[in-house]
Length: 435
Ligand code: AMP
Ligand code: GLY
Figure 1 (cartoon, rainbow, N blue to C red):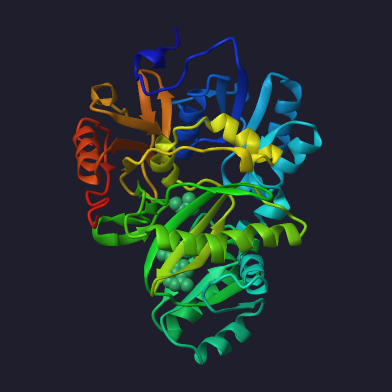
Figure 2: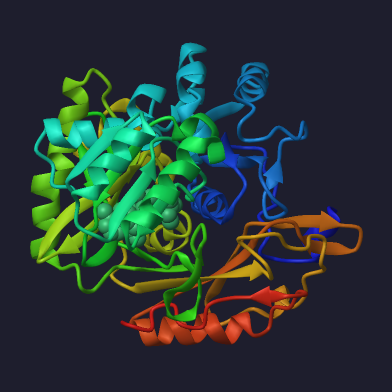
């Protein structure tokens, strides 16, 4: 028996001999939540991660999520893999779905052309302007001098963004022209490589943020419950931006009227617009919204599930994720009745001290098997050490719970977090505190 099976029951390492095998590309908490939900499907056999983490079965070749040629070759040689789920932004932008589809294999996620909504902010802004989708006023620049000249006439604060993928670090909120000039120099000076060859200068919007995710099959869409991420490292929304320190779902402030408005003014024109662009979107489309004066505006598109939103949203899914993913690929979402629990879901991320900067790795993790009371644990930066589980990343674990109300869900999460130990562990104590 694999030693880790005795270390944590939260590791999904069961191997079965019937059902369709699935490969999930990625290795974070989001991917573990996808793996767990897929394993609830009666039609699914083994689910593997590439590169995965200690919570999942991993393919033996140790391929990274961005090794698109290696993954394509692996899938070509393994006919048992019935579906590849491409979860992170980079392999989508590198065309992994296109490569697998060209091989005649089933892949969940948008093509490189459709994922451009995420990998080029200049393209996304132009697209929104063309199809009348509400977003902040902006200008795009390829020259630093022109950009600096433009901001002199603009209101402060102002937002400067790198065009391309920048690990969530390419957005600068600038209080004055001096900060904005510094941001322009940093981005265009090569901090993010070619992702900073073009920049967006954008009006600063005031309001509250909501993540709205939808399954989109090219032509039809099905909305998931809304969610809310906590991007800053420390309590009170202080400290540097991270990949996300916790999330809850649904967002009580974003009621039915706003949801209908967002569907009509944002989701529908986006799906229809991508068809007109000749790049129909298939996969999960994530709308990062700012609600300003009761109007939802698009801050950003992501062409994938969010992390850590997914760790709160997917536990609410009562329908079969494997069936939904297949219907998304086949363009048959329209006929599906996708059911969601009306419970409240919360997750809190346990991170390594120092994250999002540098941090220690290889610290033993204890207490996982004391977790109870309806909490789930999703693994992220967790590796297999000589004697058990050890930390291997900045965001290490994510503890999630469902309840009839947010207060009970939060209580379950925080009581269980207190049982988990690793050196320099830190987490936010105020996730959902405004609910
Ligand atoms: P993005 O990657 O474009 O979603 O930006 C990251 C974060 O920066 C967002 O979640 C917001 O908190 C903030 N942000 C981005 N654009 C704006 C804007 N135009 N006005 C205010 N805040 C923004
Ligand atoms: N939680 C934000 C993201 O996944 O991009």
